[in-house]
Amino acid sequence: MYDSYIRAFRWASDRIASNPNGGVIGFITNGGWIEGNAASGMRQALADEFDSIYVLDLRGDQRTQGELSRKEGGKIFGSGSRAKVCMTFLVKRPHPQPLSINGEGSFVEGEVSPCAAISQAKYAATPSAGTPRNAPSNHHAQIYYCSVADYMTREEKLKFLEDTKSVLPLSIYGEGAGGRGLDWQQLTPDEHGDWLNKRVGGDYDTYLTMGDKKDKTIVRKVFEDFYSRGLATSRDAWCYNYSKESLQKNIRECIDYYNQQRELYANKEISDIPRDPTKISWARALENLFIKNHYINEEDGCYISSIYRPYMKSYCYYAKDLNEMIYQLPKLFPFSIMRQSPNASVNRVISVSGPSGKKNFSCLMVNHLPCLDMIEKGQCFPLYIYNTDEKKKTEEQRSLFGSASSPLAIHGEGGKGGEVDCNRTSGITDWILDQTRKQYGHDDIMKEDIFYYVYGILHCPSYREKYQNDFKKALPRIPFVER
Image (cartoon, rainbow, N blue to C red; front, side, top):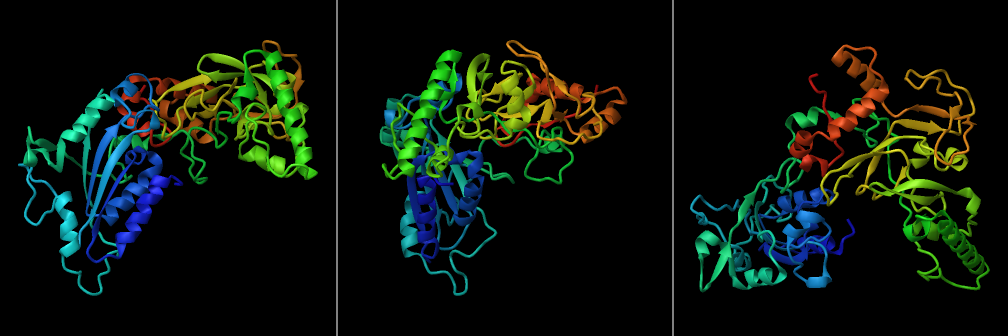
């Protein structure tokens, strides 16, 4: 959480934490924290530390697409921002008391509106001795939320703000020539810290997780731990091209420039990394190689067919050095095999939208190396897992793929054919195979059947509609259907 806005929230909260008279914090910020998966801890902390929270969502998130983007309306700061914008008021009272609006829309006795909270915080009595203001408590803030309407233009949003003369509820302040109040909606956080777009939970939490790398003790999962994100080059303009000849030309020029500048830097003829964006694109991993005087050899990578965007094949330079992050992809698309048969289909992966994505959930099955954003922040679950480094023959694995150490025949468009001595196992766990056979009473069910079953479930319209909020928070869970 390195966002400067989030740091500002923390600094301001700390500043009034020890103030016996409480206080009010107000910010106009990026609004991603309201429902972002990564900000769940922040939301829980705010609910614990404050007595009342008021969020006016001005929307305008242009990182979305299609109808969803149009609903977000105009950008409140024009071209100055593509993210949604919100106004937030955090109220910490001298004596923690729950604040709520009654059924008639009026504040109950002892309450304070955000406007009056400032004066109350200034003049209220000091809490009793031995109860510091920042001590942990069991109370949670009353959270109020108001959003502008769908499709509002920037000008309409500004007029809305101009006409809003008070943060009092609309039912109290009213609406007329003298201005209007706000139509607050009270929110109740769930156990995950979600305020909006809450997960369905319930039966869904009992479904099987597709994979879990964080907890190695979990056995109730569909895929082994070698699923991976797509390829993140951080220099797509150099590493992708629809023309193989143009791609090779770009890569050679880029590598030559890197090695020339690396030598100059090593010989202290230059004192810093050269920042010419027409020659190369720098990112952390490549900068570290540069500083360590690491030589890049074109032959260490390979030119292969890949999927750059949905249904868009492109040539790609696949290399550990010039690709910023390759994740677990060498287990799915091994370098040794790809060098021999760069256009061959050596695997199939189900790529699903990663958590915290802005777009609606999507999934595609591909048989070539996918880009990171072929599907937004895509996680790729493989049919096969490769280990080309294993020299020792292993005993036969229990899967439909036969001997784990038998040579793999390579065939494909433009491939050279032949065999590669590698270890290949299934990406599906033994546990789910056993459970599926017991569930349906068929011993002839194979791991490949489960792979395609998962893909079918992920395309079920009712399943996707019901659990769309859950997909934005974590990887999908897979149920057993009755038949």
